[in-house]
Amino acid sequence: MFKKNIANFITLIRIFGAIALIFLEPLSLPFFIVYGVCGFSDAIDGLVARKLGIQSALGSALDSFSDLLFYGVMAAKIFPTLQRLLTPFQWVIIAVPTALHLIAYIVCLFKFGKFSAIHTYANKVLGALVYAYPFFFIGEIELLYSLYMYIGGVFALWSSVETNLIHIVAKRYDVRNKSIFLVKRNESRPLEEQE
Image (cartoon, rainbow, N blue to C red; front, top):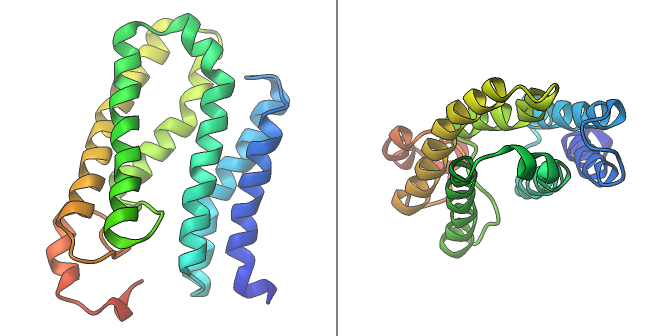
């Protein structure tokens, strides 16, 4: 029973960690310790599930929920810092891809009946970039956090557009669609071959 659910337990660590972050001072040492544990759990839960062959629809939904919760709490905690430091244009860079990602969740829910987003390669890069962003506010060096935001904004826009395109173009929900360029190939293969 434990082995079958170990990846889900790792994902639950991120959920409880996100809740703990609510009570911690933003950008403090305890905040970054819990933040690091959350990030580590995000990095390994899917890997553990794949290596042990225990991927599940529940695990995918739980992972998507924990990502939304974790990044939602993170955004709320560092919002005062962002509000103080970011320009209106930088807010647009955050708002547009965020709205497009939320639309991707809605499209997936209505089209495939799943509250999930496909973890594309671009989404994985974006997740790492977003995760690292709070570290760039240490010392509040404008050039550093602004440059990082523009680079992240390019990946954010690409990943959100690509995820929506996959959901729109695909005839079925398929976790193998790691890129828009793989949709046609994956639809010619049975779902049982999923990795």
